[in-house]
Image 1 (cartoon, rainbow, N blue to C red):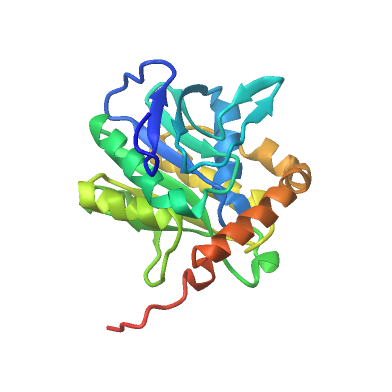
Image 2: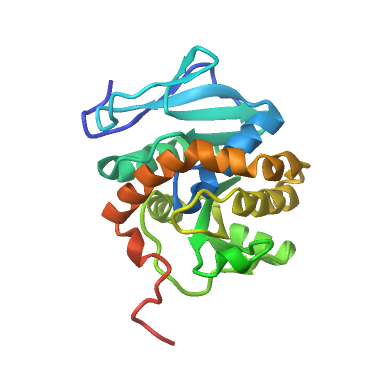
Length: 251
């Protein structure tokens, strides 16, 4: 095991893939990332290939169908990898997770990283189909925004795991395109997750049906409301209350 303040990626099976696409779904605003990632895992029948291990993590395991899973795990289907967490990211582990993931992705010659998340909007209840905004780290990712006529997040402040991952992708020159859907701030939002998946379909050429996700929306909200409460508390401690405020500089 590595140092106590570091994170190790343990490959259950050798992850041999050339220039993969890497999606990230963590508990965040509206649980958009986790909900969309879970739907992708189920729809693509993805298999666990790696998990993250660290003394920084709480002693938690997850049970599905009587099988034990690590809460921080990586799935694979063909050239698509997906990092999913079912617990809030511990604030003290955010930077270590980001460094471990981005260094691993650099070794894998990853062609594109896509963090999936939400943007809190006060009038979400009046929005039928949430818009998705993007943040790109380099020219390769920025070209995708133009090629697929996606919307850019022009001004704002980001905080938490995705901010750290974007920063490390810039440092390592890894193409990264964050997809952020308009979302309820502290309420699980399957509708926002569906909007994110539609953009993934465009960019990656997949054909993930969001119908089943929308049909199960109320069930998902009930099952994830406790996680949303725990996540909201963690996000507050990471300065997420300031996220997407306008920065002080102007042009």
